[in-house]
Amino acid sequence: MITAWKEEVYDFKGVLKIFKAVLGNGILALKPKQQAMDVPKPKTFKGVMSASEVDNFL
Image (cartoon, rainbow, N blue to C red; front, side):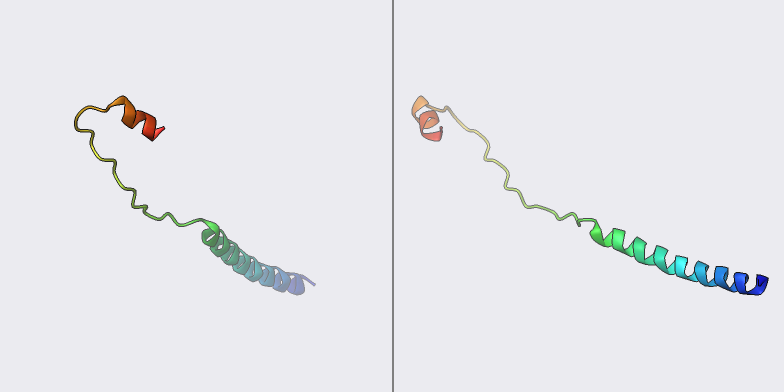
């Protein structure tokens, strides 16, 4: 009976290792990958802005 119990524990440890590996890979696969975004930089302001340009903007 003890031998059978030891075999079951051994089998259980093998299944547990497989489960941990699968679970670990699944968690890594669920993380979204960060992507670099190319965001254009605004043009520097040079000069004076008139009120008509502000009205057109809004």
